[in-house]
Length: 187
Image (cartoon, rainbow, N blue to C red; front, side):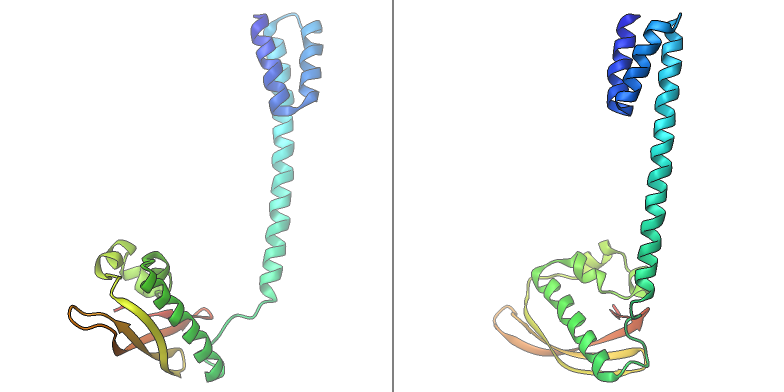
């Protein structure tokens, strides 16, 4: 049974620090039964774990409050009342970023630009099955018109076909502003 106490002694060092080791040594000398040693050490470890849990909970609460306070001071993004130039600038940046992800073949990133409604009706697996990257070489915004929460983006896409290289074609996309962010409406 002494081997069990030594094992508990080393576990106590790892789990609860030097205080548990001192408790285990003290109980070796004073306890009449090995189960008393285990009970005393378990009690000490439990109290230290509970104290650590309370402290980490307090730290987590404080961090959450700081995060919420920080977010409260941030601007909500764009809305339907945002000036058209500002909307167009943000929509253009997001449209080009989505197309860069498509050109690179990063469908997960391209999928993340889809509107919440589009993602609700189209899973990532279905999106990957439908979208076949590899033929596009370049994408640039040509024109953007925004009315309220909807924006129409005309992209000029450069791609290769079987016998023709560098074909440029316009493509009209619809973007919707939800919760301060423009999202691509996938059809």
